[in-house]
Amino acid sequence: MSDEKNLGDDLNDMLGDAKEGAKKAANEAKETASEFASNAKQTFDSTDNKKILAGVLGILFGGLGIHKFVLGYNKEGVILLIATILTCGIASIVGFIEGIIYLTKSDAEFYQTYQVGKKPWF
Image (cartoon, rainbow, N blue to C red):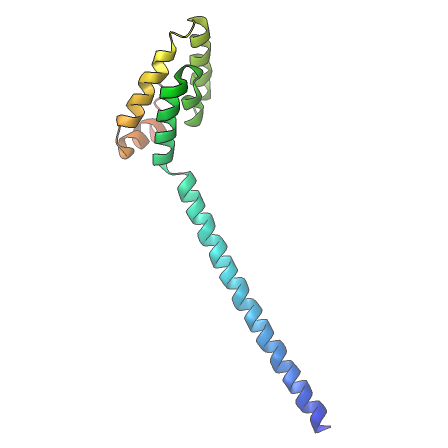
C-alpha cells in the first residue's frame, strides 16, 4: 500500500511540475507574441517608411497618384490620375514634384504636414 501511495505522490508531483512548466511556457509565448506584435506595428506604422515609399512612388509613378493612395488621400489620387490622363501625361509633373518634396522634408515635418495635418497637395 505504501508503494501505491508513493507512486500516487510521485505522479501528483510530476503533474504539478508539468502544469507549472506549461504555465511558464504559455506566459513566455504570450510575452514573445506581444513583443513581436508591438515591433511589427511600430515597423509598419513608421512615418519614415511611408515618407520614403510615398516619395519614391511620387517620383517614379507620380502621374498615377499611387503616392497619394499610400498616404490615404484616395480622392486626390483619383483626381491626379484623371488629370494625367486628360493632359496626356503633363499633370504627372505634380507627382514628381511631390515625391521630391516628401523626400526632402524631415521625418517630423513630413509626419506633421501629411499625416497629422492631412495636407493633400504640395
